[in-house]
Image (cartoon, rainbow, N blue to C red; front, side):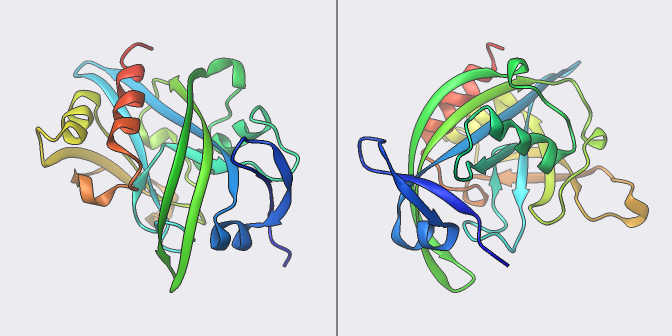
Amino acid sequence: MSQELFDIYDDNDRKMGTAPRDEVHAKGYLHHSFHCWIARDTPEGRKILFQKRQDSKDTFPGRYDITAAGHLSAGETVQDAVREVEEELGIPVRMDQLTSLGTIDYYATGTAGGKPFIDREKCFVFGYLLNLPLTAYRLQEEEVAGLYETDLDDAIALFEGSKSVIPAMGIHSITENRVPQIFDTTLSLQQFVPHKSDDYLHVFKELKKL
């Protein structure tokens, strides 16, 4: 099966060409990605949703991450990439429903599946206030292990360092009889993809304004 191709860029964000996904992550080529953070309002306050990455992912398997996100394939625009939300979460979304939260320059290294990776991205970040319960989502099993929600203020406290763990509710992508069951859990900082804390906090505080 042929690998997905990404557009790659120089340090001034000028397109240099395309490269296969494995090569992009092996050599650390700069590429573009789409991030969509979903929040919802409840009687207890505003919540934020995180996805748990599948253990098969080629970067940061099993970590908690952005609600829905993905790389832009070669030739795609940011507007095209809104497809990631429906692909990963089963919820159709239009770009005009999202609020731009700016861009983030992201750099990380690690090992996944025994292979080292270098991940350099320019991330186009969006927020979406969507008042749906967890059980309304239909998760893409190949990409998403679970979906979790917690109080937005607790998420801010976690990344500011004033709390070491926070309570959350979650659903698994693979469920008995295809019916998602909500369970209680806790989240800690070490379980998240290591984006900069300041980047997480910028997004969380912007989500409070939606």
